[in-house]
Image 1 (cartoon, rainbow, N blue to C red):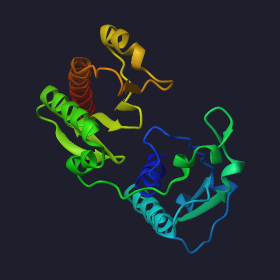
Image 2 (tube, rainbow, N blue to C red):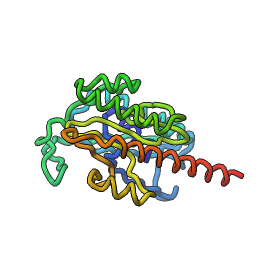
Image 3 (cartoon, rainbow, N blue to C red):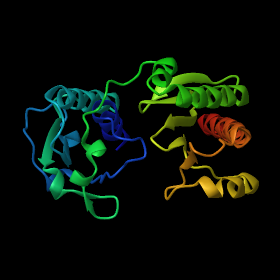
Length: 235
């Protein structure tokens, strides 16, 4: 599922938390595929339903990304079938049952993904750039050993795994992933938590930089504990 989601993010600009994927595994006697494939039992059929506004280049990028990602999981390149079903925007309902046509921004072709955090930040207005730079410095100070990366088209800090993502939107700064494991912090973030637990800091209100620092420090501890647990399992 992550292989497909990563391809959707990279090629179509789908948000990292905008997931709606169903994974089904059928025993070998329940399906048929061309017998000349390298590993018929691992044949993978991927069907994507979306709106009809993607460019041909974006679709090619998606197909290639899916095959590359599946190959990394051990599925041969000739053992997949990718089908993209495109619907007119009035035939897709989002955001509480409203036709997608009512949200033009949701149908805009994806932009080229930034290759660095600097490039990402430069894509916004000066006032938002100032906020993003401050958030960037706060999370770096809280996780000095972490590496800056671009993941899912957003700035992120990575140590053993990704600690935090941050991104700018029209009306807020987003911080991911959802935070658990500390009662005090969870109480503090409650006013900013969205439906899925991701945090939204409104641009028209003071950004709680101290809270962002505490969140990042918590994620550093959780990341280290998870890495240590994996090492013990290997032993």
